[in-house]
Length: 99
Picture 1 (tube, rainbow, N blue to C red):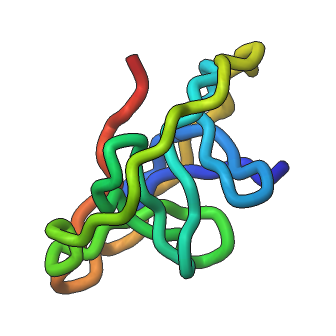
Picture 2 (picture 1 turned 135 degrees about the vertical axis):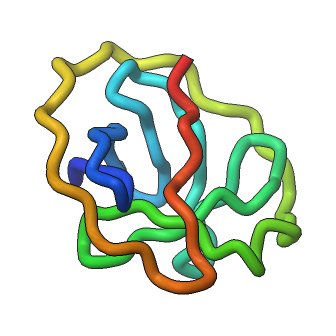
């Protein structure tokens, strides 16, 4: 398990194998060829700098197969947010998926 933050520094959740989970225990994405796709198959973003989530704007139209999310897991205590990084040109912060 690897903890993840968004590019702007917001604590998001974690990566477990090829799956992305919110800290509240919701299965929200799968990693396919270094890109993260949501349950509906739409591109959500990617991981850069080891543990930061970011979205490349030009890839937002990319699609993969939909998948049924795994059952919710136990939640984890929210970790502290970090300072954000300067945004790369052509990118935006990872979407807020927590409910």
